[in-house]
Length: 179
Picture 1 (cartoon, rainbow, N blue to C red):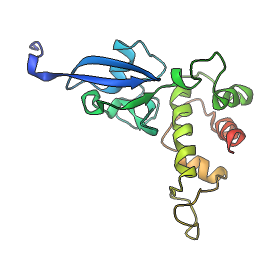
Picture 2 (picture 1 turned 90 degrees about the vertical axis):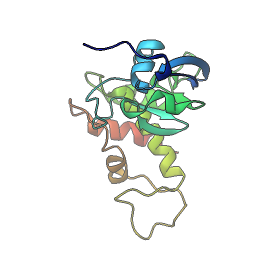
Picture 3 (picture 1 turned 90 degrees about the horizontal axis):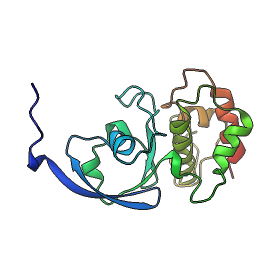
Picture 4 (picture 1 turned 180 degrees about the horizontal axis):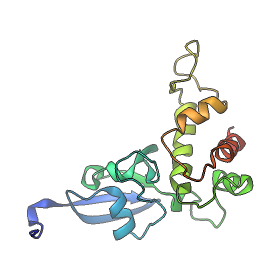
């Protein structure tokens, strides 16, 4: 038998989600993924494994890609959250990466696509900021943008699983938007 949550186990948090502020009273045990899906009706991010291993729940938090199934919402007070629904901004046009996924047919069932898109955007920002990956060459200058070849893209996207096997098209779509 479960007891009702005690009043002291909730806090008010303000999150800026897809550019809009939301002030919510949040149970301390609630993860960001559940808050997005159940409280804000943003169902693009998916619950795949619920253990941070598949990447289906990836969102951008203050510009960094993170697994929302592992993030306690109460710890994110004041954060800027971007979900797949917010990638295109306020307009009707998709984000260039979303357009590249469509043009390259970089999805099949589509379940992992929101996480793949958010992860790819975070990965592009990491490489532009000079963050090396496991396959970045040892002679790469520190703090300079990391050139993204297929090997770099695959390594950086390795935390996002696609059960349909659309990986070659996902890599091609990412290549299409590299500046």
